[in-house]
Image (cartoon, rainbow, N blue to C red; front, top):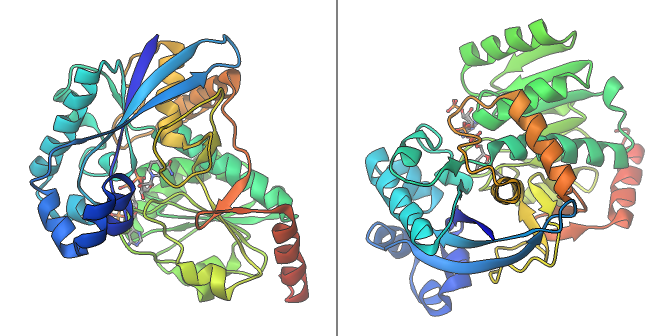
Length: 360
Ligand SMILES: NC(=O)c1ccc[n+]([C@@H]2O[C@H](COP(=O)([O-])OP(=O)(O)OC[C@H]3O[C@@H](n4cnc5c(N)ncnc54)[C@H](OP(=O)(O)O)[C@@H]3O)[C@@H](O)[C@H]2O)c1
C-alpha cells in the first residue's frame, strides 16, 4: 500500500494542544506553551486509514505528525530553527514509512515554502498549495452561485494577492470576472501582478493596500499569512461571499456576529473518498480534509512520489493537473463551513434575503 504523511501544527495554542494532550493544554498558559514549544520534540499524532480511490478502488494509508510550533513562533524564531524542527518532524514521518510528505498551513508558508525542508529529507515533499488554489477558486465559485452572484458580471477581490496562493488564485479568478481588485501590502508587487493579469485576460484590474476596497467586491478570496484576523465587519459589501483560505483565519469572528448579510466560508475543505478515519479531530466533520492534506493523499494514490508543489511560484498547469487527479479519485468540494460549523441551505437563503433587503 502506498503511504503518505502530513505535518500539522497548533494554531490556537490552548485549544489545539488540548486536542492531543488534554491536561497539558488545560493547565499551561499560552505564553508557557509558546515558550516550551521550542524544546518540544515532533509529535506522532495518528494513523490515517481508509483513503480509497473511486477510480481504482486502491487505498493508501498515512500519518499525521506535528511540528510543535504555533504560527506566531514560526514567524518570530530564526528561520534555521524553524526549518530544523520541521525537518525533524519530517524524519519522524520517514521512520513511520511515509513515501511522500505534505506540509500543513504555516510549515509551507515560512521561508522558501518547502525548498530547504525538502533538501533535509530523503522523501519528496509537497506544500499542497496547488490543490489549495484549485479548491479555493472552486469553493468561491460554488458559494457565489448559491448567493445568486453571476461571476461574469461580478467584481472579485483577492486579499494577500501577492502571496504564493493569492497570486495564482487571482490569476485564475480573473479569467471569470470582468473586474478584479488585488489587495496586498506592497504596491509595487501588486502592480506587477496587475500587469501579468492584464496581459493574460481582458479583466479590469485595480490594486490597493486598503482593505476598504472590499466594499466593492461581490466575491472575495482571502489568503494572507497574517497571524491575527484582518477583515472586519465594516470592510464588506452586503451580499458578498468571502472564501477564507488562511489559517489562522483572515476574517474576524465579529463578521459573522455583526453581518447577517454576508456569507463567509472556509476555503480549503474537501470530501475525501473512501471510509477515511483520521483518528484525530482537527476540527472538521468526519470524512473532510484540508485541500493541502488532500494533495498529499492524491499524489500517494497516483504513486507520484515527487515534489509536486514546492516554493513560492505555483504553476497554473499544476493547479489544473491536481484538480483533474482529485476529481478522478473522488475528492470534492462539498458543503460549506463557517467558523467551525456547517452552513445550511436555509442559512444561505436567510443571508441572501437579508442582503436583498439592504440593497446588496
Ligand atoms: N486551507 C488550506 O488548505 C491551506 C493550505 C495552505 C496554506 N494555507 C494558508 O494560506 C495562507 C497563505 O499561504 P501562502 O503560502 O500563500 O503564504 P505567502 O506566500 O507567505 O503569502 C502570504 C501573503 O499574505 C500577505 N500578508 C501577510 N501578513 C499580512 C497582513 N497582516 N495584512 C495583509 N497581508 C498580509 C503577505 O504580504 P507581503 O508579501 O507583504 O508579506 C503575502 O502576500 C496561510 O494562512 C496558510 O496557512 C491554507
